[in-house]
Length: 331
Image (cartoon, rainbow, N blue to C red):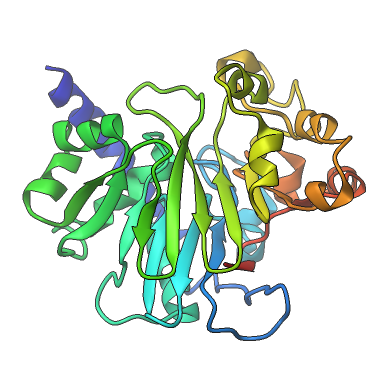
C-alpha cells in the first residue's frame, strides 16, 4: 500500500516538474552563462562547476504569480546542482539530479562535451527531497532511455529508489545502476578525484542526508546544500569550522536569509541555518576561512536569489559570497 501510494502521489508532481524544466527553463530561453574561473584561463585540471543555486522549487517557483523572472529568462535560477569534470579523461559527474536536469545537462554538454547520452560517469545523491533526485526520471524509457548510469546513494536512499515507483523501474530496466555509499568512506571518481559523503542532520523522511567533500589533485570542495542547523551537526560530533578548515571552497546551505522570511508559516517546520546565523557563527574566523563560503540552495523568498543589494552587501561585508550559476572551481 505504501509503495503504491508513493508512486501515485509522485507521478503527477514529476509531470509538472518535467514540463517546467522543458518549457520555462529550456536551453532556447535560458542560455548558459559563461564559466567563471578563478584564473580566467582554461586548464586541464579537474574542476567543479555550479549548475544551479535555487532551492528545490527553482526560481521563480510554481505558484509565484508575480515575478519579473517569468518574462526575463536572465533572472531565472535553476535548482541547486554541481557538476564535476575531469578534462583529461573526459569524465563528468553530477552531484544531485534536479527537476532542471534537462537544462543542466545541456549546459554541461556545452561547457564540457562528452560522447554518449547522458555522458555521465555517475550521479551522486545527497538525499530524497524532490529538488535533489527528481531529475532521475529523465533517464527512463519515457525520455532518454539511458543505460546503466551509475547512481551513488546512501543505504536508505538506495532502498527508497529500489522500493518505490517510478524509481524502481529505472533500476529494473537498467537505466541506472545503484552504487552504495558509506558515511565517511571516500569513493573513487576516476583516476584523479574522490567524493566522501558526510552525514548531516536534516528532515530525513525517506533517506539520510549527506554533504560531499570532493577532492582533486590540488583542491577540495565541500557541497552542503541542506542541513537543519549547525548546532545539531555539532551535537552529532561534527563542527562546521572543522570541516571548513579541511576544504578550499565550501558551498553551504543558504536557503533562508533571516527568520520570519516565509509569511504565515513557522520556519521551525523547515529548519535551515539562516544566512545571518552562518555569518554570525563564522565572524571570528580569519578572512581566508570566511572567504571559502559560498551560499547555495536559495529559496524564492531569499533576497539573495534576486541579488538584492542590501542582502548581498551583508554577505560581502562578512567576507563571504553567493554562488553564481556557471562558476568554476579547480580541484
